[in-house]
Figure 1: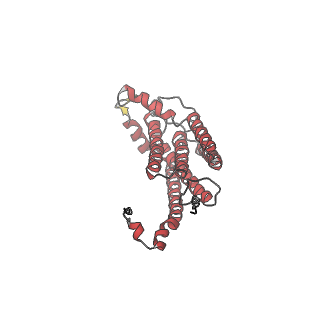
Figure 2: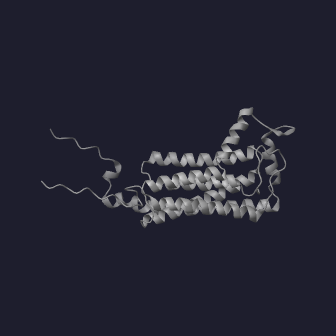
Figure 3: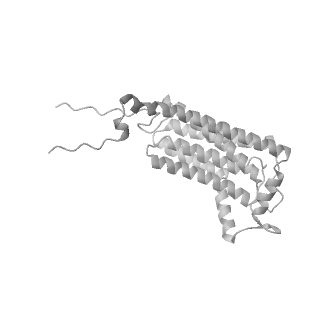
Length: 264
C-alpha cells in the first residue's frame, strides 16, 4: 500500500526562489526594526529628560502620585493592605541583588549548555546597562519625590528610575538573548511576554510605593528598552558571523548539517 504524502502548504506551492526569500529578508528586517525601536526609545528618553529638566512635568508627576494615595492622606496608599505587601515584593525583583543573581544564573546556564559566548555577552550587556543607569542618575541629579510617604527605604537619586531601567536592561536583554537560542515560536513569545511583564510590574511598583516620580519610571523604561534593543542587534550580527551561539537551524545561525545517507 502506497503511503499518502502530507498535504502541501502555501509555502510549498511557491517557486524555490520565493520560498528562500523570507529567510534572507527577515534578518535584515529584524536589524532595521531593532534600530528604529532603539532610536525611538532614546528619542523618547531625551524628550522626557528635557521636560523634567525644565520642570514641565511637575503637575503630571504630582497628579499620578496622589492618585495612588487616599484623598487627604498622602501616607496611606489606595487598595487593601495586602496590595502594599505585594508591591514591596514585586519591587524587590528590580533590585541590584536580584538582577545580579538572575544574570549570573542565566549566564551559568548558558555556559553549562555550551553557549559560552552567549554567557559572556549576558554579563557584558547587563553590566554595561547598570553602569549607564548609574551614570545617568549622577548626570541628572534629581531628588526623590517628597510629595507622599515612601513605603520602602531609598538612598539614591531619582532620575531615571534604577529599578525600572535595571529591570528593562536585565529582563529584556536576557529575554531577547534567550529568544535567539530557542526555536519554538510559542516559547519565544512566552519568554518575551515574561520579560516585558516583569519590567512593567517593577516600574509600576516604584510609583505605587511613592519612591519615584512617574517620569523617572518612564525614562527608565525608555533607556533600558533602547539598551536591550541595541544588545539584540549586536546579538543578531554576532550570531550571523558565528561569534555567538544560536538555536540549531535558526534563520541567522548555522543550519544543522544533514545526516549522511546510507548506501544500500
